[in-house]
Image (tube, rainbow, N blue to C red; front, side, top):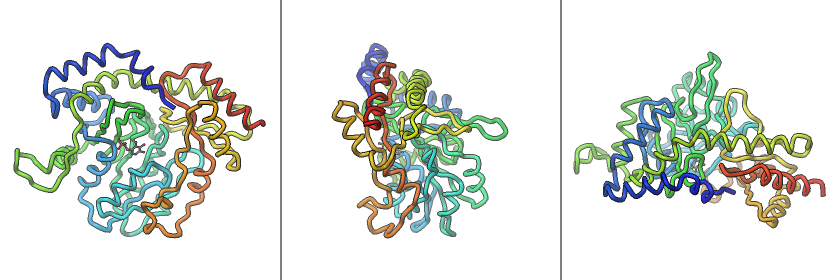
Length: 370
Ligand SMILES: *Cc1c(COP(=O)(O)O)cnc(C)c1O
């Protein structure tokens, strides 16, 4: 589904040099590469603080830890996302509450969040799924009205931009109290191992996350609270420092491939191509179609037999995952249920050329006609 080798070849010299320099520096943990990348990332996003951490899941966990929530406090998450978003809530002894998503954008909305609110709700975790922003203006207004924290899961949308009704533009991950991202290799900004980051404008929260990510330690070997060990290592930071300079180009390449797919599917009544929200740019972490549920699994099989790497994100609503079996007995959210049956994600990466896109689209259309 992704061509990481092709992407590496184009920037091989810069990347190799960055790695070699870091190895020679021996500053493998908390080296100057990390601070430099954190600053570059904060500047790129237009946010005051960025903190590199071990991976995207840890970023989400640290964000929640920094908010001092109490056991039993409820955190609203979408039922249609990767498990990490809900997993960290459960791990911390908080209570995940699942909300439905919009059938077109696959994202939480203020309405679906409102339907999941209770007097115990303390935080909401909008996920900017597949590369575009949730409609944040009404979500932020709802959060403000009810005094809720907003932790954005930006693992799939780094570089996307949301426009408020007054014309202000903000990058995803910088609108709530804390934003989190993942640098897993296949993400839009991926490193060559595990990595993640938290961002915030709040200096107190930033400091809190830094301390929690380093064993609750401010002064060496004096531990103020129970933390974890979650660091972005210097080699990954050096790689990310190079790749961040290409992020806008990478996202533009993804958008070009998406435009081409859209055009090739435009006449088909049986395919819904990704719906682009008017308030958000789309960075196409995934290019996800909706097709008739009765044919989705056979289409997936057909494409795989042809050597086309495609996948279903996500085949099971989170509340039906075995891991959550005891938590959400009997829960059913209609849009999430429908999406898990209809979605299929096609190959999407920075190295897709026009012929390959045409071949893939031809294979999809050919199957649906047969
Ligand atoms: C990838 C991803 C994560 C987790 O990131 P890791 O770096 O793999 O821990 C969290 N949320 C979403 C929506 C993701 O896509």
